Length: 158
Image 1 (tube, rainbow, N blue to C red):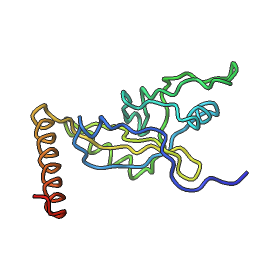
Image 2 (cartoon, rainbow, N blue to C red):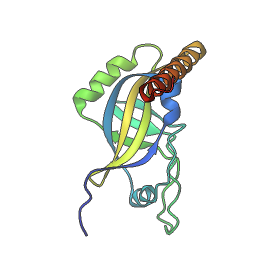
Image 3 (tube, one colour):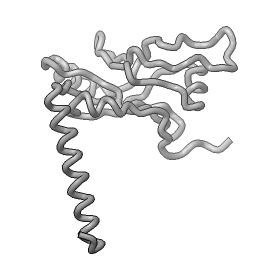
């Protein structure tokens, strides 16, 4: 069997970019069991409610939902178990220092296969207030209107 190359997306957390302002991103490996990987290869997972914590110098991904593998037997995994994330020691110490700031949390943005290995894009994020979300929506709508006007002008319609 040929070895996988490149990056193949499994699942993304689009709501995270709406609810949080992203400060920094990290790529982390995930410790998984066999049936979890098989379930992920089918593209079945949910990271909407997931978050990461640092406990005793190790980073764990909590509340990540990977459904049981359909062809699995009694060796099947628990769908919402806590999974360990693999990061370099320097990255973990940097994260510990930044997490001690108030209002900062670790949120998974996406999960993907990178050369056959499961990776998680983890973001150091600060929660947005309701007015920040409204401001971002208004800014995005204004930019969309500007792009439409520029397109019409380029075509000679307006």
